[in-house]
Structure formats: C-alpha cells, structure tokens
Image 1 (cartoon, rainbow, N blue to C red):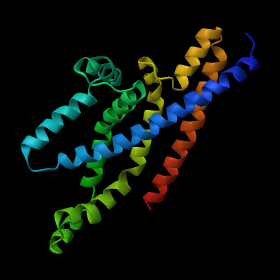
Image 2 (cartoon, rainbow, N blue to C red):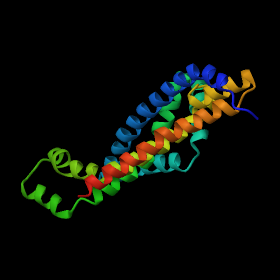
Image 3 (cartoon, rainbow, N blue to C red):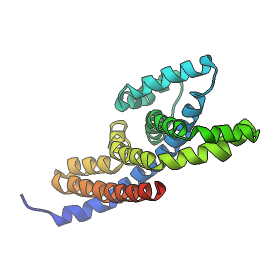
Image 4 (cartoon, one colour):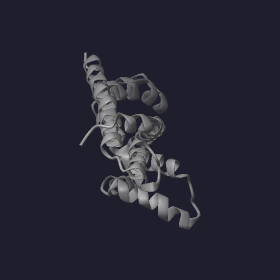
Length: 216
C-alpha cells in the first residue's frame, strides 16, 4: 500500500466543505444544548410537581435512548406528521436536544454547589426572585460548570459523524463519498482522523487551562 498525495489534494476541497458543516453543527448544537439544558435545570427546581414530573420523564427518556434513534425519528417520522426540516437542521436540533439532558445535570450540580449563605443573603436583602437568580446564583453556578460544559462540546464534536446517516455531508460524510467514488479509503479517512485530533486535543487543553483558572 502506498500513500497517494494526489488523492489527498483531490479530497481537500471536499474536506473543507465537510469541516465547515461539522463546525456549524457543533456551534449551533452546543448553543441549543447549553440554553435548553439551563431551561430544563431551572424547571426542575420549580415547586410545582406537574411541571417537574413531565420534564423529568422527557429528559430521562431522551438521555436513555440512543442519539441515532432520535436522529432517525426526527428525520423519518416527523415528516409523516407534516413537520419537515432540512437534514442539517434536523441533525443539529437532535444533537442539541440530546446533549441538553446532560448539560441539565451539569447546571443542576452547579446550582446546588452554590453555598447556602448566598441564598440566605439574597433573601435577607429582599431581592426579587429573578434578581436572585440572575445576579447571585447563576453567575456563580455557571462559573463552576464551564469546564464540564466544555467536555460535552468535545463529545458533541465526536458525535457529528452520526449526521452522515441522514445525508448530512460533514467531514466523515465527505470522506466516505470521496472514497466510494474513487476507491481510495486510506487517504481521506486518515485526513479526517487527524482533523478530529487537531480540533479535539487543543480544545481539551483549553478546557483544562480554563478549569485551573476558574478554581483559583
């Protein structure tokens, strides 16, 4: 087996297209998971059982079913009910929704880690509930959970190839299409593997540095 640099050169335009789709999916999926996870966490702290119970059931169901099953459900089943999105939008929403059930637990841990004295001080100052959350609790909680949220971003990055199963041509999808059309698998798949390492490893180092900085 010989390494074909010509195949690498031919694949690179497709690689850049796939990389752009991968990064778009990661960015939007992360935003959805962070925002929705915070909503889940706050709703789970409401005193009303009829709010907590449905949220708990839904999030447990999502967290305990495979992402691929959810992806296929959104892509193949929802159109039968008249709900249709593009393949990329479907994939991004599925990833964001799936990971929001994990970021929810991260937020809950961060909120519970805020010292009781902070809650008591807010009550003593007669702060409104909204002000207590936005000015006292959430800034401290989110500061504590940023490293954990970063780890889920890396996990989402490694899950983006699953979008290939619903025709989204992210990096692996472009590599597979190129390989089947040209009967050259080694070069495109190696390029993709190296690309994932070059993205994920520096990101993990950044998360570790951020964690050390935040715990000071």
